[in-house]
Length: 177
Image 1: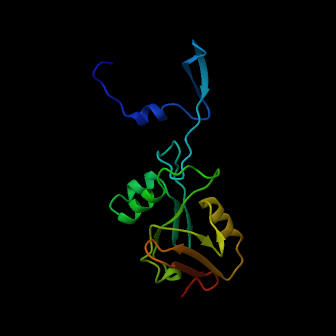
Image 2: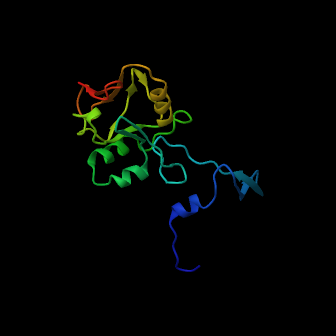
Image 3: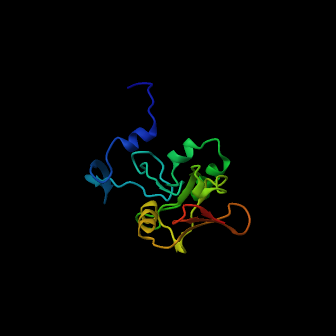
């Protein structure tokens, strides 16, 4: 229709990637040819569109809320400079392997078991009990299988050297400092 504009994201998301194809006309060896192209979504380390390459996902362990880093999550945290910095740090990186996510400690829900850790938030989870974390589902499985007395989460500090360590006692439901 004349003089009408639409959002580019509408064009990208109006078809189901992985389930549909589009017919395109191409030039090959000097002649026109119609070709069906299967749609495949781009795979980025930071998903961009809710319902397209991003979906709500989280795990809560001892009041620690972990989510995958995504543009929809960052938009919810638009006033938080740490959230924006995380997106900018990982933006545009191709997905290194299927299922890989940047797992974020989004917030800490108040509870006696995590006393002293309420100031943490919007930081990347590096390891759980010494094992690197590759996605939220893997973290959930690792916590469910864990029989250790202490749950240890390790985060690199956003600025400077060192790391933040959160240790939660499974038995007494109190934090270990």
